[in-house]
Amino acid sequence: MSAPSPYRVLIADDEPAVRSAYREFFGAQRGFALVAEAGTGTEAVELYAVHRPDVVLMDLQMPGMSGIDAIGAICGRFPDACIVAVTTFGTREYVVAALRAGASGS
Image 1 (cartoon, rainbow, N blue to C red):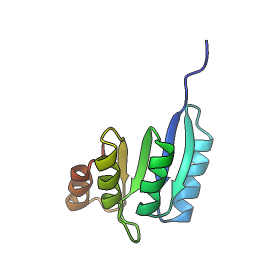
Image 2: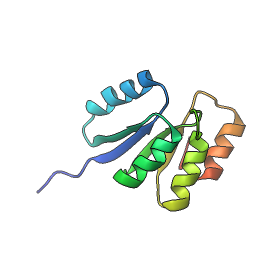
Image 3: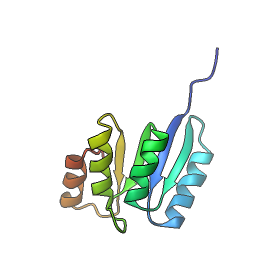
């Protein structure tokens, strides 16, 4: 019997230290494989199309294309995408915008 495939994860955050922490965390977890890292919303959209991960952890505030706009772009093209909004800005405005864009949770 073969082992179940790991969940494939894409992380999108403009802070290199945050991406490094995610990389370390997922590198130590069984059942998860970090398949790509994006530093901008535009990169996240491009990398999603290439890797088609099982889940995306998306920072909402990034330079250029925001995480909210990236969520909308990904979900508009890939309606079954599973995206979790990650932000230090817990205001209702950000959470509602992320969910309206198609985030699975925040």
